[in-house]
Length: 115
Image 1: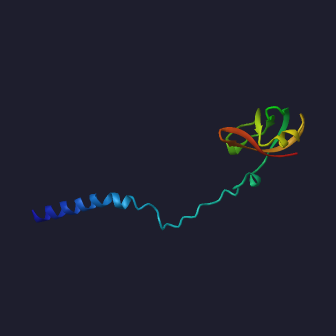
Image 2 (image 1 turned 45 degrees about the vertical axis):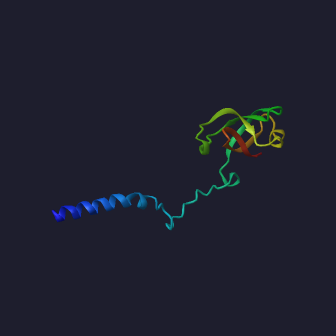
Image 3 (image 1 turned 45 degrees about the horizontal axis):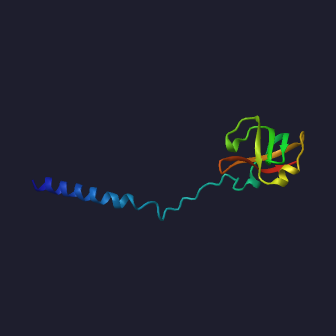
């Protein structure tokens, strides 16, 4: 009987301590994360594209582009918001460019464009 009570008390102590152990988190654990090597848009790979249309009034640029792996988009023709007006003003229909597109606040946006 005494052994049963001792086992029961040990079990109760473990159950009572479980939330405190779980709440400890991972403080003090040194687990460095691996870098993907592309921390900024300027460091990321650019995709080949051709300018199909430029709408200066809306700041939209239509591109026929290769796969945009960073946003999971296959090759297609699609309109994108230019990050700034100067970017849209600097290109013309037919220009071959290299671009970086990112999802900025839910809008697919050209964040880098090179001729």
